[in-house]
Amino acid sequence: MTKNSTSINEVSDDYDITQPAPAALVESLRAFGYSLRTAVADLIDNSISAKAKNVWARFEWDGKHSYIVIKDDGEGMTEAELVSAMRPGSKSPLEERSPKDLGRFGLGLKTASFSQCRRLSVVSKTAKCSSVSRCWDLDYINDSHEWRLLKRFNPPPLHIAKETLDGAGTVILWEKMDRVTGNTSHDDNNAYKRFLEAIDEVREHLAMVFHRYLEKPSGLKMWINGRQIEAWDPFLKTEKATQELPPTKLLCDGQYLMVTPYILPHQSKISKETHKNASGPQGWNAQQGFYVYRNERLLVAGDWLGLGFQKEEHYKLARIQIDLPNSMDSEWQIDVKKSRAKPPGYLRADLRSIGKLAREHAVQIYRHRGKVNARKSSQDHIFLWQQKVRYGKYFYSINREHPLIAKVFLDVGRDSIEPLLKMLEETIPSAHIMITSSEEPEKIGAPFEDCTYDEIKPIIESLYFSFLSSGCTKEDAFSRLIALEPFNYYPEFIETFKNQIEGE
Image (cartoon, rainbow, N blue to C red; front, side):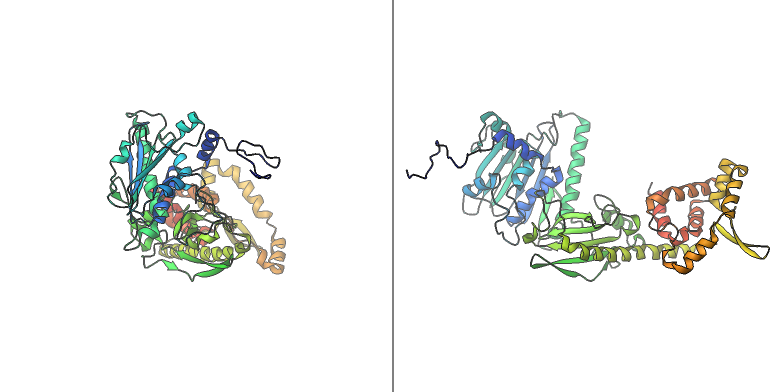
């Protein structure tokens, strides 16, 4: 042994060898924050990287003994490749990857699986080699205090035996799914219902995340419990009324990324079924914003990326596609779950401009349709303030016939409110308004300027129900609302309220 060498049993003066405690680390790996749907999606990333054409998922209910099997017809793995794939941190995120690779940290198979189950079994087969298998059992690791990757399953995973690999491919089995089913019994109907709901959530998530793969004529096909998953296109590209705005190339880390805004059609331009489906897993309002893709795989589904925009009803038709190569992972701070992306600071101004443009187009579609509805109304506009002449001079009075004032008279009593109205009329700061209007007209705010729909909704709701209580039909009530000042300037708010009422 040379002078500077150190054997396994020797202690170096320069460093200590500190191996992580297996039981402690493996439990920490379970806390990455995966949901069932993001965990399943992470496994399918591996299938796509393995060039699979088909992926089959099977969810089997049996209380605490429930299990999930995911099978693909990809290239499969040799024994050495499988052992490497089962190793936590099997590949550094700094390593150069294939441009089509959907992985990054070398953790996905393990962290996604451990987040949902305590026993992960994998069987894989290549075109030239026989099948090989390995298993991580977290309870066994806790007992042995060592990273023992099992070669022989005990007991054998009978659930995998049902999934034959005639050619190349991989089968993954999750058992001991404490994070999915807990310790429930087979006949727990509430737990069974939650299990079925979770399957639906997974199906919707996969349809959204992998829609660009599923849309291709000879692209990926996926099934859950024998039911094929149909792609969910957030941009309604096949609809004639969808507007695709000019794409923008942005330079990021020496490469270009593409940003393409889409303005979805007003609901009057599409079928009810299409409108319902287009709302997506989270609903119309939540699905607006940027959609960040990495190698056509969706990472972020509807988010304004911290650019200072709020999710509002009248902007919900704006959805913006961003395409990233996997070489920009670090710049965009892609996380392990591949469910978060944050744009670098030098792109924020450009993205904010693109977002603002898309929002302006979206609200135009909303307001244009609202104005059409307003023109169909037979009601005259009802103003809160009225200009009158007294002793040859102008003054302004509050319209006592305004529905909101009439309602307050009815609820509180005219004698109680009249003195307040008179005081407001006699103390209008007319001179100050005139001076400000002439010197700084651009600083005079419009009614409800920058107010959100949620802030204005209580006023609309109060007026609507007061109309109904006075004997108006629903249609007449909506017509009167559109004719009311200042809602005649915001017909999209009335239309949003109408859609919510009709949807109840």
